[in-house]
Length: 113
Length: 115
Image (cartoon, rainbow over all chains, first blue to last red; front, side):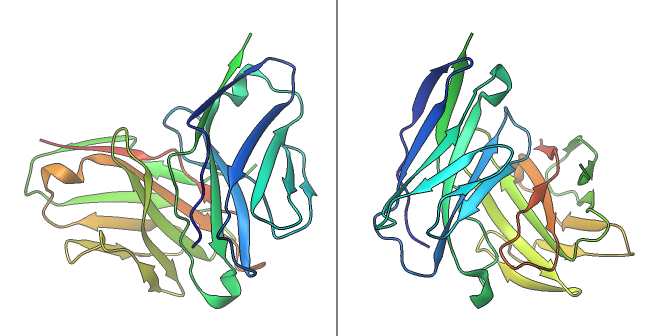
C-alpha cells in the first residue's frame, strides 16, 4: 500500500470547518483513500473513503485532487467531540485481496472551544 | 448503530499464562479482524478471518496466537503463552461481505496487561 504523510497535529476552533490534509504521492490507480479516526483510546471509527471522485456523507467530505496525489478530509462544523487522531490510509482495491488496513501515526486534531 | 462488543474491557495476566479475548461481531457481518495497539504506538493489523479460516495474517501473528469462531456469534483471540510485550489494547473488528472495501466496525477494545 502507498505511504501517506499527515501533519502530526492541528487545532481548529469549535464550529469552524476542520480541513485535514493527506499526501499520498505514490498512490496507484487501484488504491483507495480511507479515513478513520480514534477518539482517545477507543477503537478506530470509519469516516469516509473514495477512489477519485469527491465524496460526502453525514460525517465529512473527502476531496481528492485530480492527480490523486493528495486529499483533504473536511469536517464542516467541528465540535469538541471531533477531537481525535485522524488516520489517512491508502489501501489496494479489496477485489484483489489485501484485507488489512495499515495505520500510520495520523493527525491529532484538537478542537478549541 | 450496531456495535462490536468486546469482553473483558481489561485483562491482567501473568507472563506465560494463556488468555482468551472475546468479541461479538455485528450479527450479519462475515469478515472478522483483530488489531492491536501498544501504548503510544500505531494500530497494527494481526489477522483477518472469513468463512472459518484465516484469510490474511501479519508477522506479529505467530504460533502463539490463534483465532476461532466457536459458535455463530463469538470470535476469539487466544494467546497461548503471554509475554510482556503482548501488553496492548486489542481491537476486534467486523464488516459485511459486500461491498468489498466496506468499512470496518471496531469494538472498544480489551486492554491486556501482562505482568
